[in-house]
Amino acid sequence: MRVLQIGAGPTGVSVFRQLYPILSSQNEVLDYVIADENEPGSGLAFGSTGNSHILNLPATTMSLDPNNPLEFYNWRARSENIWNDGTYDERVWGEFPPRRLFGKYVSSTLQTLLDTRENAIFIKRKVQAISELKGPNKFLVHYEGGQNELFDKVILCIGHARKKPLFDPNLSNYFCSPYELSHLPSDASVGIIGSRLTAIDAALSLEDSGHKGSIYFVSRSGALPKVFDENKKPYSKDLFIEKLLNLEYPTLNDIFVMYKEEIKSVMGLNEDSVEKLLFCVNSKETFEKELELLGKQTDWQNVLLSSYDVVDNLWEKLSNLDKELFLEKYYGLWMTFLAAYPKSSALRIKNMMDSGQLSLIGEVKSVTQNGKTFSIFSSDKREVTVDYIVDARGVGYSEDDMRCSLLLSSLLDNEMISVNEYGGIKVNTASYEAVTRFGIVKNFHVIGDLTKGEFLSTTDVGRCVSHSVKMASYHKDSIY
Ligand SMILES: Cc1cc2nc3c(=O)[nH]c(=O)nc-3n(C[C@H](O)[C@H](O)[C@H](O)COP(=O)(O)OP(=O)(O)OC[C@H]3O[C@@H](n4cnc5c(N)ncnc54)[C@H](O)[C@@H]3O)c2cc1C
Image (cartoon, rainbow, N blue to C red; front, side, top):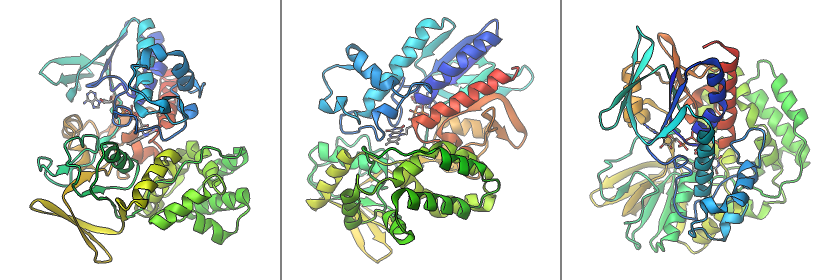
């Protein structure tokens, strides 16, 4: 069997780790190729350069080994000879080291696996298109540069689709990516579109580069991510998880009520106080209040984070109407809870706000380009003009977003994938094979954040690892 796995990020390495031994035991001849256009581990989140872009979750919880949460933490201590090239500062030993260090761990884990798996290779190549040869049940894969190859099985682990750009990407004052801001003039005024983790990255990069001009976070919600409490009290989650899993046909409201009751009981608060506590952080004042309460009234984080693993189970049980309601009204807010960020980064954001350099503009109605500047309009009729726009809206899940990738566009054209009505690509939730109007595309798998519509919780490394374990165990139980 010839297998092509596209992508060697955390999901790809975890899939390879789990799946290869199973395929190897099932197939007399196995040829496993892993193709990535970049160095392994250097995708959107962990390929970011510099020391300011730090992990948003503690090092002790970030691991590619489902049975050992400390694998990354221990690798850091043991493998300094591999990663320490002298470019890291003291943060590298902290609980939230630079994300690029995690990328190095992903790459080193892949190399260790390849060293002992003789029928597998890594190639640094971009896959541009794939078509299905139905008769012989094979996939014809086209690499950038013109070479083609046939495979029996393809596994797509390409991470995220970028959002379709808001303006012409060739405009000199519009940055589609927040990770390439080096030639932005230091006195320019900048609107960063978005207010979640990618936007935080952009603001920190500007601060690192000594930016002097005004900076605005520009978004519809105006809500910043929550700040991660590093010193949470112990919480015994089992009973609550059991209650969630026992819900048979829950409505969205049933789930909200259960969470609210659990938070009230864990924190000893009444309804009003819980509502106030979990209110959006959407102004300088609410942000300051949140920082003040950090470590004192943050046990709600335990409740949310410890139940992240059962989110797909709850999502699957919701009615279509409730799914739509959640995505329309609550998804943004939910992500501010789940994609939280560390206090050290939050304090830098606060300093930028205190100095008057950084402000939040919420309830944004539109952003328009007027020659050399951009105007930002909010619903309170405020208009702010900026010289530059940085697009930090993060990742996209719509067909328009997916069409910006040559590979995804080819897969859509060849009807090998279809768009999930709740975002991303439709897959069979057991085998992770793509599903189109013709049914399951046998042996064509998609795993990672592009399957968000099916599982909802696909955004962090822990979930990527759990999904690869589930996908591998499906292979174990089925004859391929
Ligand atoms: C700003 C930010 C910060 C984050 N911080 C954290 C964090 O601290 N902790 C956490 O758990 N999660 C974090 N995340 C989420 C994180 O991105 C995911 O958990 C993780 O990267 C998913 O891994 P992946 O392998 O699916 O995707 P990726 O890491 O993006 O890897 C995908 C790989 O596929 C390759 N590829 C794509 N297309 C092709 C092609 N056509 N041909 C060949 N190769 C291709 C890419 O080069 C890349 O190497 C963060 C996300 C963002 C945006």
